[in-house]
Amino acid sequence: AAKALEARASQHTHNVIMSTLVKVHLQHLDSFDSKARKYEGSVVLLAIDTEVKGDGASDDGFVCGCICVGIKDVRLDGKIRKLGYLFDMRVHEDYQRRKIGSQLYKSAESATSDLGAEAIYLSVNSTNKKARSFYARYGYVISSHRALLFTPLLFSGLFGHRAAAAIRSITSQEMAQLFDSMEGSDLSLAGGLKQLFSACPDKFMNAWVLEAKGPDEESSSLAALTLWDGDGTSSIKIERLLLTPATWKSPLTQVSLLLAGCWVLWLWGLSVWRSPLTVWSALSGACLLFAAVAGTLASAFVRFVTTRRRERARMIAPVAKGPRGIELLRDLVAHATVTAKRQGFGVAIGNLDILDPRLPAFSSGKRPTSGQTLFMLKWLRSDAPKVCDFSCDNFFDPRDMS
Image (cartoon, rainbow, N blue to C red; front, top):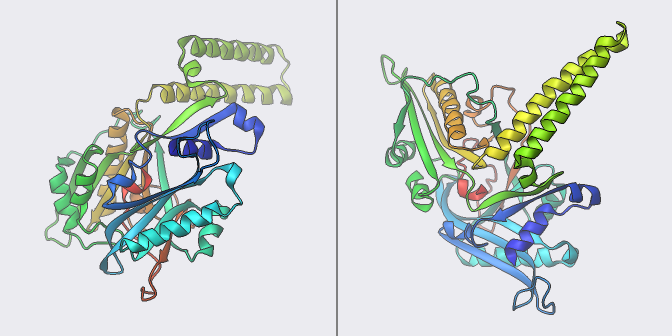
């Protein structure tokens, strides 16, 4: 029932036309609380209307709201502290504006505090003003502006990729030893990276290290990176994008669309060829060329998406040391994206603070001035420190977004 609620909430839209043409929702691959169980502790609460029976209701009633908080020990403000990470807060649209969300949140905060957590943090889209306002009312403040670094893998490695000769694959134990030997940043796990490997052994895919030796230790550089299966406990289920996925995947559909497109382009081109040379015919010819290129790219995209076995890979725990650290890390990111494509993923994702010094290794563009998502934090105790901003190199836990 809780899984059905989240699926409905994630695809709900007030636009009737869009909801008819496009149906996409979040789908849990296991039980609803499977993500929460990956943490050292958790709080999972449901709001149930006991007066509703049947029509999707369970034996106890209709699940109209839910909230989950994962609890873990992390480094924050120079100390190991117990924190809660709030996720999957949903209220059925027919039950909104009845204070159910507020009651769920207050109960979850109280339960999290009773389990010893000093603070709760969460992730929210920067454009979701409604959610940001809701949490701000309860004392949450922005602690990190996040850059979501999506790398579509459609053209990754298309013109060949020559990996740096010195890239070396290492074991999870070696990576944990390397990463944990460095000074811990905010949100890094108390048990180190090896704790993450233990919590999600089936999601770790590979780790690499790349070194550039110098005449002394100060002039030497090193970079390291891990690649994870980011599909985690949930997946994006596409029910309809104009057509159903099964229809898009049908060879008959693909051949029919290809032939129809070629026929339209041929008629268009014939019309341009027979027309006298004017400004309008030249413009039409340019549009024809653009349509042909766009159609080719669209066909390649549809073909790529419908043949992917997996959705998203995540690049976690980047390391960059020394004067050439960012340059070496950039080579590892390129190597990781090609590896992800070969493994059947559609996109590779990095998640860093917009001020993180390692960000240029993931993006060649200008450093963003605002984040696509935000981390928001609330301290639960009166004697809590005044610090609210996470360090710019804060650790991203893939369990938070799985």
